[in-house]
Image (cartoon, rainbow over all chains, first blue to last red; front, side, top):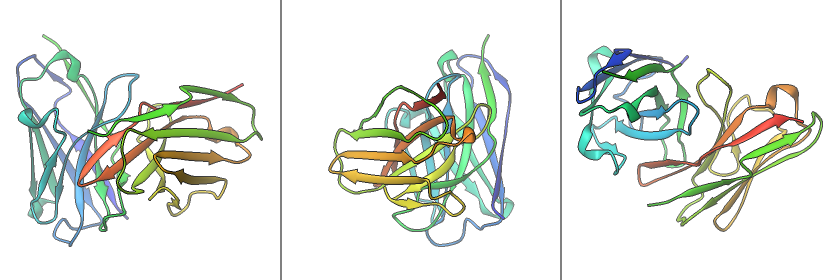
Length: 121
Length: 107
């Protein structure tokens, strides 16, 4: 059974750096083709994909946020970490991590419950 | 950059009716379009991937279709538990783009 859980601060100040951790079970990020991604959702708004890291450390980013994002994996701990610099009030929302199944035709299938992040001074 | 436009923004139906949700892509190279259902306070749930394929456990009243850059999610005989927000997603070249969502509400 694949599960993912997001963790991190619930409140950050503007200009600070946000660090979120996705801890997963039921799969290995050493498996060919597997990936873990991050997606966010401002209150009452649509989903926005942020970044994804593959089993081979290949990292992909939303081009509009690329300069602020870094995604890494700690395979031994079954964790994926996302950092987002220079946080702003518009970055407030729920942050999800999700598992991507192997195969080019597959997408983000298993999701965590999300963690709420508020940006305020 | 691919833009997905979903229509309508809000769809009001009664249980038992058929829901037709649309997603138009500004450009497309593959049929790598997925549909998600999201209920308040929950994570999105993958319904359809590859434009047509249902995820394991998804009822067959949910179906996906495509014609060029237009993708459709059809929900036949809408059940009370189907009222939610639906998002389409295009995924290719390791980029994932979501539409703005369609809210399916009870009439």
